[in-house]
Image (cartoon, rainbow, N blue to C red; front, side, top):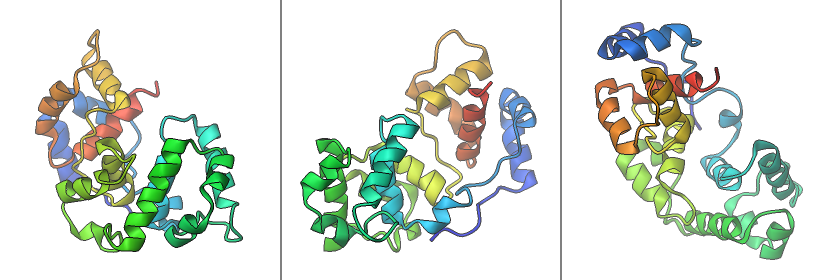
Length: 212
């Protein structure tokens, strides 16, 4: 389970601000960086439940995703999301009746099968570096690089992740620069090179800029 949120030092934040004056100005305008992973739900969930929730929530509005996630959790007496072996024991039709699409049902079952078989060992996954974790997670059906990056940031508290395909981050950089169009993921990656080793913090700032 993740511990307290990971937070950079003041000196590290100062270096980040100095690396990019526009980003530095934005850092002073947004609330203080809360640290990753954020407190609360992440401490109560297992890694499996966190990844499963990510799959359920993909491409859905929050209210619809919460409803479906809640219905899947209600399929067993335990109020929490079903454990891998419990999920595999459920008839797939019950998962579909709870509102999951066939693609998400298949992704959840693939995740559970890999965990039960030992092909995906989540208990010690935090010991690996970012690239290795992304490689392991993206082997699961329905888990792409963006989902793996969200796991790194919001579950493991990694501070140097740049989800350059994220529309919110790209829109944040457009607003930061006052540009007419959003940057491409490649252009965002190039710009973010100067933000290492706190690219997760920079991404958080860019997300905040889209809330104005």
